[in-house]
Image (cartoon, rainbow, N blue to C red; front, top):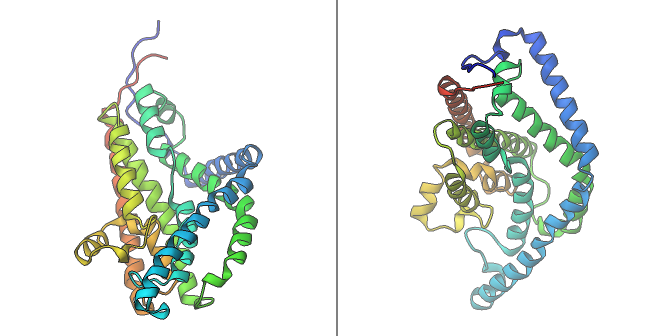
Length: 294
């Protein structure tokens, strides 16, 4: 029978930068290959995800049509969005959520802690957070490598809803940067929640509450400008808007270009905050974690 042992010191940080870069490259390449082989359903799945937008188009058409009858067609706006803009907004939030959504991340981390599987990251030269981040990067790369054509087809068919045409280079750059930072915010935010598993055996209830708030406050259901002014001001202080609303608002010109540097800096600050929180939670968690047996 194996004698009990307590593992408290992770090994990844004992290796040099060259060795770590080589290891990360191998992990990324392996994860990417697995997803390209086993997830050939991405293209069809992507098209299926766009089907609800048809329902949204009919729903919002009815809403704006009723407003137009009362106020005149050109005056029909809700929260600063006209009918065509609201459809374009939903298409763009699908792109943003494809970047920032991390299904199963927090629950997977908590499960590995609860069932003792996390020991392998403590006794082998692999960093848990780095490993999970690389697998998510591989997942996103594989997803967009296969789903680019379905996205292009849907956006081509719906090009008439983008009434203002192609935005400026500064707006495009900010849009892409917001997607990348939204991915990192989504990852480290959920990973930090998963780290709570070091202190509590079950995090499913907390995760459910988090997902509920994230779904509503990210702007995935509707633009945040449709909220009452007092609530909108409060929600704008939270990081959730960077998961869906903010990238779409940037692309559609709802964020003035002179305000973009400040808004991007705030998003970068939230990203840095969650990276630190996740790392601190992991470091403190493994200090109190004990693994027994072989």
